Structure formats: C-alpha cells, structure tokens
Image (tube, rainbow, N blue to C red; front, side, top):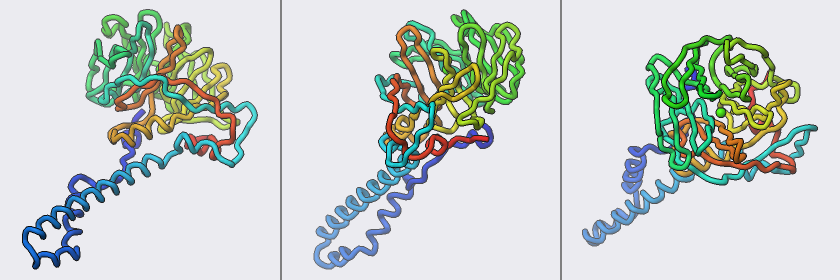
Length: 342
Ligand SMILES: [Ca+2]
C-alpha cells in the first residue's frame, strides 16, 4: 500500500557518490605528507596517490559501515532472542529459514501475489502508470504475460478463483476480474470495503483487507461483504492489514510497513502467531539494494506445501520455512513488529 506517506520509501542516509571523493580529496590538503613536496616531486606524487587511495578506501569503509548499521536499525534475526522474558499464552512466534531464492523483477511494486500451480505465479503491481497484472515463471522470474493497467489506476491485491483473477485498486472501491489465461479484463466491479489493499480466497469466498484492522469476507458473485471481523492481538486491534494469503485454514497477512506476517484465524480474527522476516530486507539492504521498499507478497503452493514471499521492488523472491522460536524474545511483539494497535 502506498499513500502520500505510504509512497515514501525509507531512505538511509549515506555519503553520496559526489560527497565521498570531495571529502577524501579535501582531507589530503592538510596532510603532513605535503611537507614531502620539497624533497622530490616524484616522491610527492606517489605519496599523494597513496594518500588519495587510502582516503578513498577509508571513505568507502565508512560508507559501508553506515550501510550495515542502518540495515541493523530494525531487529536482526539473531537478536530476536535475549534475556528479556516474553511469553504470553497462545503466542506462537516464528523465525524463517530461506530454502530457495528466485529472481524477482526489481521493478515490480508487488501488491498481490499467488501461486497457480506448475511453477507459475500471478502477481499484481502498483504505482500509477506502472500497475500491472502478470504471469510469472517461478524458476526464472520471467514475466510470461502482462496486462498493463490504465495509468489512472493503482493496482492492489489479487486472487485467483477458478479461471478468474480478482483484483482491487488503491483508494477506490473499484476492482477488476480477468481471465487467468489471457489476462484479459472481463469485468469491473465495486465493493464495500473502505479501500482496496489485499485479496485472497479459500476457494469459496474472498477475503479482503483495506489497510484497517478489518478482515472482510466477500461473495465472489456479488462482491458484497458477507462478514467483517476485527483482527486482534492480545485484545488489541491490529491495523495496516495488507497482502493476504489463505494457508491451511489461516489467513496470513503482511502488516504494512513491518517485517512481520500475522497468522490470523478467519473465524474470529485472532492473531494466532507471528512470523518475523526482518533478515530478508536487511540482507537485501546489506547487499546494496537501496531501492527496495517493504516486505509484501505471500503465495502458497498447497500441493507441495511451499511458502513464497517477496517485497515491493525486491530483486528476489524467497521460498521459506518457519521455525518456531521457543525462547524469550528481545522485546514484545508489539515492539519487534512496530505494530499500530488500538
Ligand atoms: Ca497472496
């Protein structure tokens, strides 16, 4: 999801390319090595070169350290366990293990993701002028088919029911139905959610999110809301429900602007567990992928029990497995996941 605030990507302040060499060069001006200029012109040139190289290396190191420390600003995976006791009845908290990495279009502002069998994914992307529906080959990340949406529309959540893809759009109550094979738009619908953020299905009804704490059930034939459930954790409503996936009787939801996925009981909205994925975004940042936005996109291969996740503008898509954290955590889930509760 993106709004005027939503569109702002977290930029990490480092020395710009222009700043590094200028600072490096100016630092040589006051160097004592300048005294060597009286001894030998050739020697001075060598010293200047050496100093320049040294300064540039130092500037590079400083920039790298700033990048690493910025990446560590959220909770690193290894730091999740500490001496601070955190244990509440019924909580299940999971870290993740990456089983496999796949390519993902770094230009895809992922808003909806689903697995459709035969190593094929469907994905919807957002941003005005860049919104698409696409069919993607899992193994290569290749976009096999694409439907580029009108530039006035901001694509959001996507789900597949039978032969039809359902998609909602941001800041409207309008959505679209597409043919899964041709990606041709078949129909336009309106819905009763306050906004269009996430969509998924259990094969019968659609589940939707609109950035609030409400999980909606929609009739796929009429798109009317048949049930509203407030998603709660420890009795508090959890806001910013974003991309969704129905997995084995649960709804998994990306919580916008966090590295956490909530495992939700669709019957009463209770959050039954949290998945902590901080290490994915942090490793991408450490590898120099400065353009990436938030974690978003969950897909489930029911046949092979594979879980896939990615993020907006991420160059990678990950197959992951969960590992329950049984020890104490480094703080509360509210803090670790930076939850907006009410
Ligand atoms: Ca999904």
